[in-house]
Length: 60
Image (cartoon, rainbow, N blue to C red; front, top):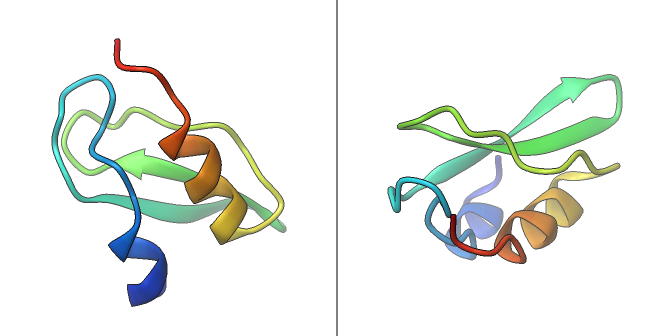
């Protein structure tokens, strides 16, 4: 994940831990993963979109 992308990720909606990381989960598919509880956000076509979708998740 680029440093710029990491700067705008919200804490995990499940455990509240930050930071999370965007990872490439498949060829051209990205998701944000919590580094603490391993929650996985929605899949997206690029790193920035994965971060946007992660940031829209409501708290658990």
